[in-house]
Structure formats: C-alpha cells, structure tokens
Length: 500
Image (cartoon, rainbow, N blue to C red; front, side, top):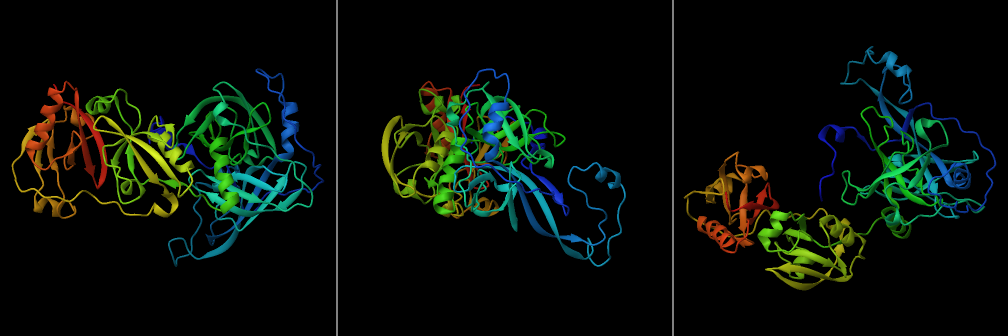
C-alpha cells in the first residue's frame, strides 16, 4: 500500500477517537417521545442557502451512543473529571499520594462512560457506528433525537475499517437513512456531519469534501476528507450528502490539540456498506484472500521490466496459498483481477477483499513480457493472516569473494553468514556488505545487511549472476535493473539505474 501524505509529526496528531470519555459521571439523559416518520431525501443544491431542511429530515435517524465499561483504577488517584474538562487542568501539576504496595497502589473497579455517535440504517433497528466507540463496552445505550433511550446489542465489528454494527429492538418501525454511492462524491461537494461532539448533544456541522481516497493506516482505508467540524464524540456519526444519504462514517481527525482544525476523515460509504452487509449476515467479515505479497510499481521498475506503464501490482512473494497453487510466481505483475483492470496494489487489495471466499477468479499477470491467465480459488483472509511466510527460497552457494556493483559491495552467502543472519539453511543470494551513501542504491533505501535474491527477475547466487543481469539490462537499452531485496525476511523489489 502506498504511504499517505502525513508527516511523522502530524501522524502523531491523528486522532482515531473523536468519542468522549466521561469518567464515572456519565451524561444524564431525558426520555421523551420519538415521532417515527420516514425520512425523505432532501433535494441536492450546489450552494444551499440553509441546511435546516436537510437536518430536520435526517436527524430522527441519528443517535447518541453511551457505553459503560468497568475498569480498574488506583486508589487515592485524586479527583476524576470528564475528558476535556477545564477543571482537570487545575490539578494536573498536583501528584496525589499512591499506596505503597504496587506501582500504582491497590485498585478498585469503577464504571467509566464514553460517548459517541451512530445512525440507524433500517426500520428494524440496525445501527452503524465506529468500532472504537463500543470496543470493550459492557453496556451500550442509544439515545434518539427526541430523547428516547434504548439498550443495544453488538452484532459484529470490523477493526480493519473501524466499523461496528449494533441492533436495538423496537415495537415500532424506526426512522432510518440509506447509503449513497461514495464513488460518485466529488471534491467540492457540500456535506453535513451530525453527531454528539464533546458530549454536547445532537449537533450539526457543514462543509465540503476536501479530498477523496485518503489513506491513514489501514489495509482497506478509503476516507473522504472534509472540513465539516468533527470533534471528540462525533465518532461513528454520519456524513450526509445533500440528498440526505450517508456518504461516510466520521472516524478520525487530524489535530495537534484534539479539536477540529478542519481536517476530518470519514470512511467512505461504499466500504462501510460491504462491511455492514457481512456483519449483518455472518456477524463477522469474510474477505477474499489471494495469498501474495505485493508492492507498487515505480516508473523505474516498469522500465526495468519492460512494461509500457507503471500500472498493476508487483508480486514480491508467493507463500503457500491460493496463488501459489494456481502457479503465480514472484515477479509477476497482476494487471487484471476477475475481469477488472488493476491500476495499483491498493486497487488489487480491495478487489480481492470484496470477492467471495471460495470463488474461482481469473487473474491476468504479465510474466517475461507476456500476459498469462491464472485461475485462482480464493481463500479467506481472516483465517490466513497468521500463516508464516518463508524467509527465502532454498539453495546454496559456496564462494566467499566480493565485488563492487551499482554502488554496493556484495558477497555471496556462506553457511556462516546464513547462521549469523538467522536465515533458513540453503538460502540463496548476495549480501550487501557495504554501500556508498552517495549511490542510487542508498537513495532507494538499500542498506548494509540486505539480501539480494533476484536480479532481472532471475535468482542470483554468484557475483556473476548479478553482473550478468546488469549487463543484460544495459544491452537491452533499459535504464534500470530490477532487484528483489529481503530484509528481516520481508521482500521488496527495487529498480536501480545501470548507468552512472
């Protein structure tokens, strides 16, 4: 997966918890009657004069969520205030005496409340929220816009997308909202967020879609970025388009201080809907599994491999699994999966995850400049994630010479090096003994101790193997040669220039 564009400093400020922890006090709730009326969509307007009609139509389906959890807290810890309370600042510099028998003294159970948001998606009471809103909760209570409260049970969760599905039982049909096709959402479209920010109760904020297809930290991330205000307590709440349909689930904010600075993230509805459908049907997710390690293709890699353009997903390793059983090999470039063109590795991950477990799919790969079609029967991702991956392919070499190639000093593996590096017996390759810090290899992230196992998509065991692959690339008029590098058992392809 490609790295998102957050700097190391701002990544620390990414808050995946705009829920509000209220300590032992909790929030008082007043019960009133809720009028159960169907929600009609508002008409889309390019520049609305007001969001009042839209807010009035969808608010009956938006809920506040209060969770109760029993936690162990130290005795004599001093006053407890809700998260974000101004009174907490008055006591932060005054340490309170702790009991001597333990690092934090004796503990006692205490009830802690947290607040979040959610929305009803069916008249029979299914409710969507964030997983981190209800994670570890002993009790979950729902409050509707009119004030009515109901207990909810957990149907299922998906930590990968931070989505949870709840269910309440009602003797009357509940007002609900529907999902939009988030792929149709455009940067600049008006959106409206609803939720329970900072425990203040039902609140509305509006803005535009600032960006699409944002990645934060997950395998299946597909976030809409918005400048509509999202704060603690908004987690799990809906992001609406102007038709009153949900285009995203408010999940995270980028902030140095915990408050909204106009950079919020909502998980795209097309991702959420698929997760919700599986949670409703199975109580868990069941994603397809191809069984390969993949990486992005850079322009240099495409040149080294003779590809017309840097598209597709490059297979860096094929452990035991569905792909290996179908004949897939490291170095293959996946360009089509189940009839759909694969633009990049992220595209492939989503396509595979969305495919049914056990389904036989056609996968087109480019190998040696020619397309081949493989028939792969997909496994299940959730049951395969713990499988071990071999560190390298077995083979052996015997020479101890070294050579300077592409700014690196490399030497073949010996039995002593294999043991020292903790590799499997018989591992094949060339070890980078040293590297010129001014070289392209260093700029590409190669370091001393890395293991080169392939060059030009062919195994290397002797120094001459690498030298021959470099010469072949030059003779073919290519600017780069493709190397397969392993570090700590993890494979990665790197294209290095063969000239200069």
